[in-house]
Length: 122
Image (cartoon, rainbow, N blue to C red):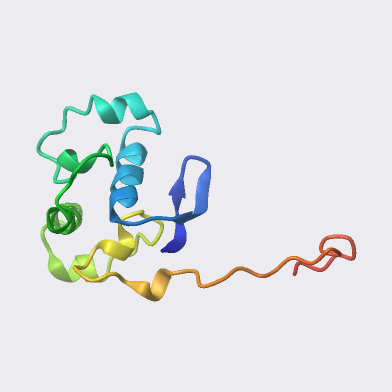
């Protein structure tokens, strides 16, 4: 799924699944230092077991961990999770048990050979 999420250099178009979204969220949490994700001491975090994004993982456990993390972020208010204003969070499309496809980027404008030469932004 492609959507706009907060990356190392600001908002970026990313292709993420749940596993990669958790990894991006953890990188964001520690200031984009991969070794800090590996050495994370926040064992109370719901995403902690899934932070590395590798190895055999329980897919239903990942879904539950994202939901639990979002609930913690929204002060245990399910309504607030549903109404979450943080659309550039990598977990945003996965905050509910089902994937929120409303933020998905279907396609980008195609560039032509003359794009930029004549001042058009196509």
